[in-house]
Length: 462
Image 1 (cartoon, one colour):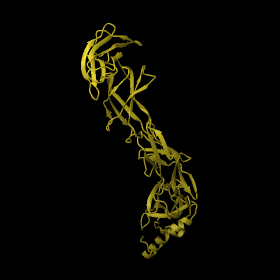
Image 2: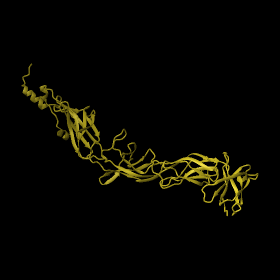
Image 3: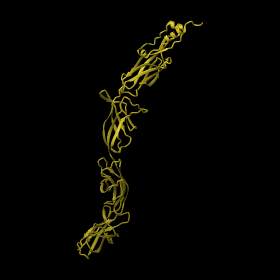
Image 4: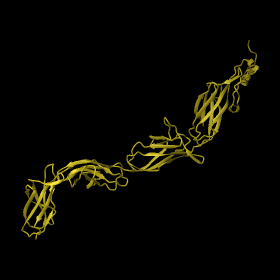
């Protein structure tokens, strides 16, 4: 049977029965989930009614956002009413969104009892922030989202500082730099420890502050030069760290004074027949800075462990290399290079080397008579000996060469030679011509001995 009810009456009844709760009404509402039957007149019309949604028990915390209270938490319950039955119950499995300052910050779905819980951290605090809770309602003609709650919460970005245990550090090269201190934030007028804050050096080395705000960062590489080294709070997110937007960036600088290490290379050495130690070596430091004096000393010891005595010195080139021939008083023993400590530079030693040749000498050398008249004969004599154990013994069947250096001359002239007798003694006569110094030399061409040189004996010729 065709209905006789006018069309205008049907539309009026449908609009009056279709209910949508406004956000202000939802905030004020604290209704329970008790079922409310629809009016009998409404049920009798047979019109399909839209269901309505409302929120109860809504709450947004905290009342102020800061470093100690950085996350927004919104809770509440959604209820729905079916106008065809008039029954209100939990709106379960409904999508709920958390919006902060117009940007979506979180999403969840309601539980079986219609409850929801959303939490998020604002990205740009430091101003009043609008916190909104929205839900999906397909029956809303102006859009599918309905705002059930919207509040404004003040937020603060706290000042931050890093206090170092040692703003200045001095240590020897070879020790890794460790920077320790405490991270603090300003809460009102009081500086308090800031826990869980990442402190880093050069984006790689990090340390998270403990509950008392303390941290410790150890640089991975050895430091060789003086200078400032800076640590700062980490400002970017990583897989295991999310920086707090409520803390202002902070940094601190430690002044480092490194006591540099010196490296001495006694790369090659040889003891020649002139009783000279031929050395090939190098001088370098752990940093760019160079010591005021780079003089290196050659030391000798009889056993390589104790009794080290300086027997010569070496000054490296600007590039650090050196190739000297250093005369040594005794051609048997142990040698090393030594650099004495200076300001900002540690003492250094090279490796120890060992060489051995038999020491020789000319003893009892004399040119006589003196003074002597010109044209008269002078006798030059002495004894050639070698070291055997702890004492010198004479040598035999060796040739000794004689030299004369005239007064005022810079060079000596070869005057002849003789062969020593069975007691190591030698003697040879010469004609006195002018004033000057006489000397004798025994030269060896073997690797066993070193050359022997007499003293210079001056003869006054009149």
